[in-house]
Image (cartoon, rainbow, N blue to C red; front, side, top):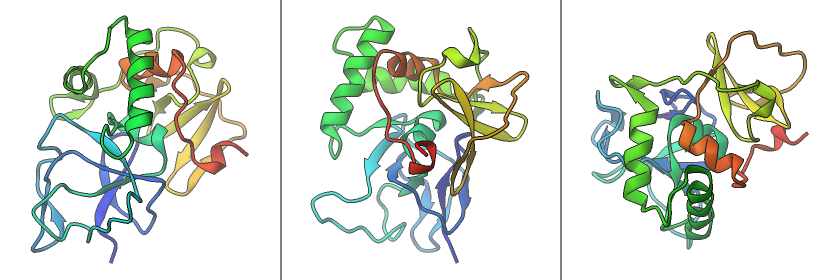
Length: 205
């Protein structure tokens, strides 16, 4: 029976056998006795994206009173949900993200705490996922940004929308009439300033 620990681009957390390329967390949001989620969906404003493998360490998933292991299809999915790279297991990526954040958002050596504060404002609306209006043509969004139309999520890759699924992306024939931006605007500006997210292989076909 799969655990409820797979994060959708909307930030919702579901149970599925799929895992994905990255893990991460939002603090402690599970009961280790039952390995089930609590009612809350975050306990810290630091929503991070971590490596699934680091220094050979192994963690039994949801087995102890520690951070709750969540999983993402790829980095773009985690960004859409409102996460950012971890400064511990992904220090080089996190520093590249911070440099792009500074360039795109007009800050200087922004702290992780300041990024978390800004992202928390942009990812939630009264506890639910915040959607943002597009400020320009869809094709001008940077690679790695994600949008929502109806119940479907789409990755932008080379100006084209790719339909997101638990298993990857599909690319042909998607016409979006009135999509809303899923990825927090500050992260979109970091993507536009040069940060290249790790994408699932199906986005690169």
